[in-house]
Image 1 (cartoon, helix red, strand yellow):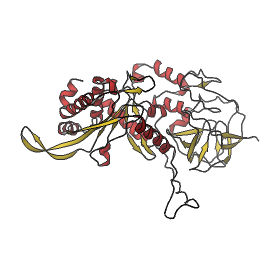
Image 2: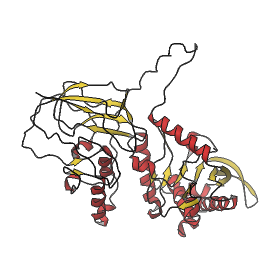
Image 3: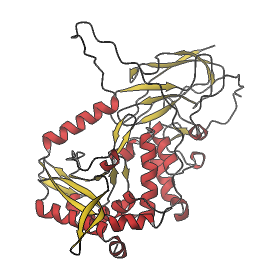
Image 4: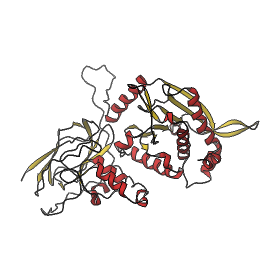
Length: 429
């Protein structure tokens, strides 16, 4: 019998550590090659880590809730069958993420339930499952509905890389490419680690709570935004009565946020300077051709902003479907790093928290963020008559380096006017 120890791999994106959310196996369990053995949380998302070895679990080297550095021992397995012990790397093209020492079976992405403790037979001559270099590549395949068993591998040692998955997507027929995203798997509930004890010497009545990976990343990003971006905020009250009526007349159709997203995308096409980033070193405004609309989502582990990519190509219904998918994935911690980093502009529905307004912080390196408060009944004057209308407050925070107030006001009025007269706006989209 040979005992093999698998260290926490490099999960890409420059991350150096990860927290073990939960173990999917226990000591004594029998595991297969590429079976998910743990869920780990990085500053980007929660991903499954598959085993590169088949055998019986001998040691789990850290408890759930603990943080490991890349390269520290994760799990030890006593081998029960001969498996290739090959170190593999993703080609330098593609994402640049390197995850050494394992792949994954397509079947493992179908669920996250703990496998039963029962002996299994692993034929030495069996066909190896499709080899994937990292959980990030597997997530991309899942999002794009790509069957990994049909993908041609070009990576070293027969590894399927991100580039291979993207080529498979590009080669798909239009009907296949338009297929809706796979349903996100149900997230396993992880126990919340107990609050750490007050360190010796701390004043009485204090309790220190260390930042998790998400909060550390958010702290760095928000601090950078406030220190680098000279932001300005403008706001306006908007009569959303007609939009509310459109939504109520079609119960199974797109939600209010989907319509607002559609109007926001149209306004960004009219004011492309707001769908951009500011290159301080070269003193240039870099406008994006595509609109990747970030949607702010409050999840269990913190605030995330996954992006609806190529939002300018979508109908209102398609936007609604994608927003719902991303929101569910973000709340479960299953959103991919690519979706979290793709945004070019952010839409924030803080009205879901029951508040009317917010001076939001721009999501660096973006240059603007649009937010909406709750929609409530308020007295409003229409055609000289006082009546009750559905009113929301819209706030807009922008980088004053890329535009002045006139541009910001023009953008806001485009969105506000569309909300107040949605039938006319949709007819002209």
